[in-house]
Amino acid sequence: MVLSQITPTLFLSGAEAPLNAALVSRKGITLIINATLSHACPAYPGVECVRVPVSDLPTANLGTHFEQVAERIHGNRAGGTLVHCAAGMSRSPALVMAYLMRYRSVTLCQAHRWVQESRPYIRLNAGFWEQLLRYERRLYGKNTVRVMPAEDTLTPRPGPTRPLEPATRPPLRPGFSLTSPPVMSPEKRRRRTKFSTLTSNPRPTTLSRRQEDR
Image (cartoon, rainbow, N blue to C red):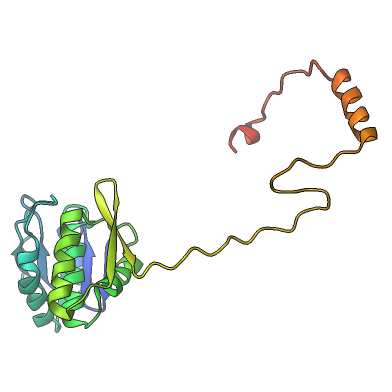
């Protein structure tokens, strides 16, 4: 169970955290936004629970809830708000990012970095990314993120893309090259040939436990 703090009064989690009454009380949470279809809304005195019934599928229309959820979070600044879904990786981060764009005046790129700093393993599905991009265009008239396909999701990449810088290579020893084998004198070649003949049938190597673990 991991509860990620986004702002002093905004929290993000999976489905387990809101079931911990002591945690909810300790964090001063007075509003729970449940972005799942089936997980129960806990009943605590003085705590309101709002369900956003959306599945975690690229075809699910989460974007229609961006404004309403953002307004509820913004209106509950006197208390704490917990936004959660099943795992806290896709639906709830998308809703939090929409709120940050709407009421914290940040771009989608900045909102993603903001949430990722507190919860590094978020992974929005492709459909939610497209809906956030449309929401950003509506708010700011442009997009600050380009998305690159990666398996079943989209990974944000700030644009424009900068050219790759050459990697820094360590200095090479004299006589060595990255594209050619070491230069070997005739005398050294004869010694290596003689040594190879003497050790042509080496004993099998048995790895120690430490070597096996490497």
